[in-house]
Amino acid sequence: MAISEEQVRHVAMLARLTLTDEQVVHLGEELNSVLGHIDTIQQLDLADVEPTAHVLDVVNVMRPDEVRPGLEREVALRNAPAAEAGAFVIPRIVGGGDEA
Image (tube, rainbow, N blue to C red; front, side, top):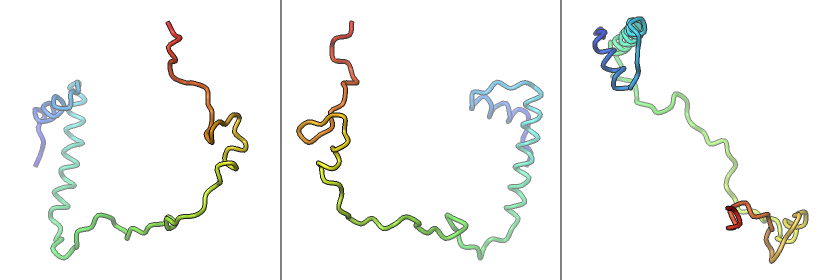
């Protein structure tokens, strides 16, 4: 199945692309090449091939998610520039109403 220049222009219009005549010819050749590869693949006998989502088995390489003790609040706040009521104190970074 070959794709015509008119079909290339239609696809370009759907994709909102402006193509020159040279680009239409070039993309037509490339799309015809892709369609040729698809035709070759469709000729393969894949009746005994099991469908797969991945070529290789997917194995989780992450460590198990286990509950572990965390830092105590005082230790976490020890190096904070400022702390108040068990929380970090940071400068205001959103408008405080002072801006004009």
